[in-house]
Amino acid sequence: MELIKRKVELLVSKYDTNCPFKLAKLLGIKVEFEYLGKILGYYNKNFRCQLIHLNENTEEHKQFFVCSHELGHAILHPDENTPFLKKHTLFSTSKIETEANNFALELIFSKNDCITIEDAINKYGVPKQLALLKSLGR
Ligand SMILES: [Zn+2]
Image 1: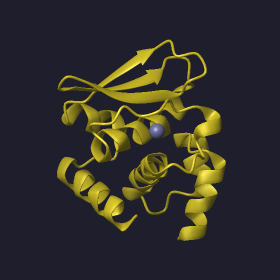
Image 2: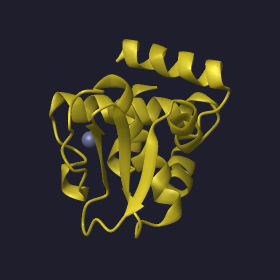
Image 3: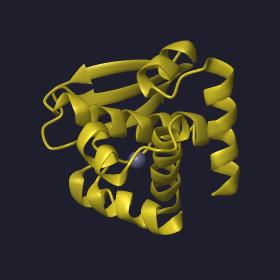
């Protein structure tokens, strides 16, 4: 957890943004919006090309969290093809999913310490359960 926090801090200070879309672009990771049905998003690597796939039908503000989660995979687990992120797997206990969620939370809260839990949920699409966990940890 601390290591992930440190990675996020380095990224944010190096590129001076905590926007996952900008960071992906700066890091050469492609973000594509596709028809994905019930899947929120996933990350994969095709030869050397890193790709984040997002659901074109997800409400815009929710993309911020999902993109942050997938960016977490791209940075923490670059060579793994990660499972599809679905609503019910958001709270999966698998290690890489937990790490990607932690990465996303650190990223969203990194630039702005006064962001409230309500902001995280309503403006950035952080799932309520995760936002509450974060608030307990602070
Ligand atoms: Zn994931």
